Amino acid sequence: MTAIVDLDAGTAAALYAATPEGDPKRFLDYLIDHPGVQLWSEAMQEELGFAEHKQIALAAWTIGQEATRLGIARPWNEAQRGYSMSESAAALLAAARS
Image (cartoon, rainbow, N blue to C red; front, side, top):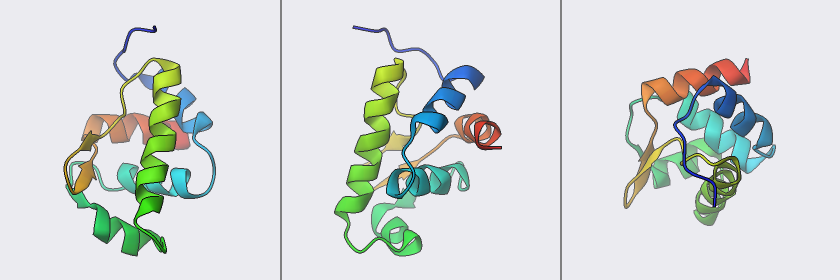
């Protein structure tokens, strides 16, 4: 098993590149664009135009699988009803997106 490492510029770039287009990429971009904010999953579903709530969960799961493959934790905090990404993680991923 690969040890979990902190997110850095290299792992952020690898995770962003590995995130599939479509719902997962839109989910990740939304988190990147709202650093430090607690985002309720119902509001995210509406903002992203997802027809079903399960699209949020599947997008998070897909990115989580890629993060695990890269040996990093998911770059967001997950609560019972939503998600938040730290400003530092968002900055690293925003740089990777550029």
